[in-house]
Length: 414
Image (cartoon, rainbow, N blue to C red):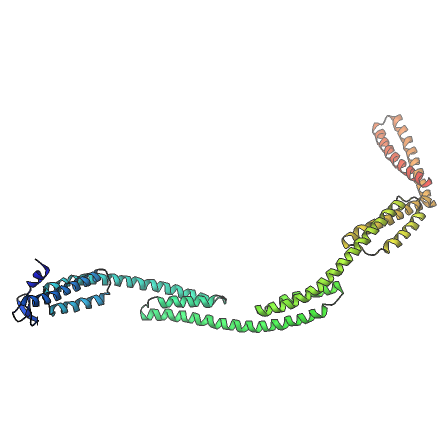
């Protein structure tokens, strides 16, 4: 049986082209096609029935696939059902309408799933909004002036994309979030207003420092001026920031003035270093000659004369590099010390009182040794071992002292 033959069983056509459809035990006219055979008229309205079957199948597929929301699906099912039962078409209209009924269960199940998903989405949104509020309140009390604005923008954009909660909860969270954003904005404006004042003061201070530096730039008083520049640098650091662009310009000016001074100083010092190095070479040569002529000192008077001539030539040569100054001066002092020591020895050797004291010391130790020798003889006669040992030890000590005293006396007499 063809599709048209199958659907034709639900209707009939009169000889005048009037077509009827049967629904259960009833029959109603669906239309008339004049100047056509009953078969042609019936076939026309059967095609309309076929179109209704396609609509039912398409709607069923869309409902099963969740292409329609529950409300829209229910509305579509109701509308199509009414359309089918009132349609001017030949088909199993009641059967087609009944085929839509099972779709209600599917829609109800989908609606329940959507309700659960919505409930979960709202729960998740509530948790996220609470997190965002906490984050925004923390950010509102921070000093994150650089990225804080963008962070609030990102939070606001995310907030807009989250679903609304129930009115009371959503309004309460939004109030906290909005208040935090307002607090941050006010604090940020106050910060930059204060910063602007501070930067203005810093600019004034740094311009004053630059003016002072300009008065020092041509100075040749190298040490004190360098110290003044260091003090200016300390004040510069303490002056704070004047804003990046302003600071860069001011620093370029200040640094340029410093560079001008220290470059000139470096050039002068370089020239001095060359001269000092030449002075050092000459002084070292003079020192070596003086050491060879004067040391060791044999004639104090001659040595002093040579030393004075050496000093006159030495000091006439000028300064040497600072790192060599101590070493060269130490060698000069060593020559002078050697002459002084020789002078002391000569004086001690020729001083009558010194020789007299030396002779008295020798005589004293000689007499004491003679006395100890007598005591030793007595102890030996008595065979007093303890006394012998004690006396021999004393004799040995005094003999050492006598040898030393005699050596001193001999040196003074020589």
